[in-house]
Image 1 (spheres, one colour):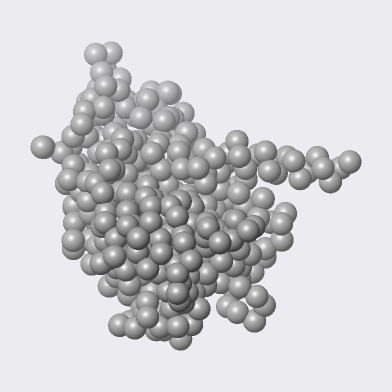
Image 2 (tube, one colour):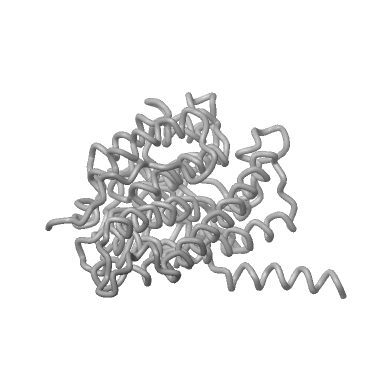
Length: 387
């Protein structure tokens, strides 16, 4: 397939970049950009791109320093992921989720973490946190069976973090647990409109033994580790979960608009002799999409800064959810504005703009980014407090 690709589009950081992770992301983005169209067509990232995520520090970003990790921050990761999203949204999605996977498994017992990172901190960890399957008590642990859909990077993962309800728990509290690649089967079920190269396939377990040390109560992840632990592990899951999905969107929207600008500049004048860049509708579209992206960037940066500062009250959690869901709506709107202004030619399957548009719509549909759900929680608390 011949791809309409604007090679002169530079890799432009969407947020104020800084730090080694962002510097590495700029190099990875160049590689990801070269392989993005083929990755979309083949529904998987190029092995070189996958390897670069490890070499660039994404896998170890949130890994505890005791196991060789960087024990990093949320703003640094947001900046780096946005750079990748400017080039290839699927690469950014995987970089973000693999990094956040390292943060979540830090809740494991020490013995489990020693097994997980026995060969170093650069371990590919996929995650599927929607509880599923069956978790039955067994000597020293559990026997687990079931299916977990939409596990991004399932084929890449050395270990996969999953969630289930133990049948022995009277209160039906879910647990999280890790499973090595050798003990699971990945079914090729990801045939989606966008984000095709994320390989968000289905993980299947058939009566697999999971030791106690390889699991932890999900309430630990939802509440965060106690005082005295590094801030990045004390943050409740709900306070930062949306960042892992909205970060790639931020870069993708900026990447789409920048490509649209370059493409529009290169177009010829119309039958009326007027060049597209001189049309009021085109300039309005550029202004609106740019403002929406900048507004979304500020919202997401504020969330990341609050998380890095360890601010985690219940009000902060609901405000973070509101902000990242609204930011996602803004980013989807920015993509719609320029796609509508692009005309029919940009709809061709080989055109970069339609690929970015598909990726943005697919990513923004994630349940964690639902503005309706976030607004319901935020409004409920606000009005309840006023009674």
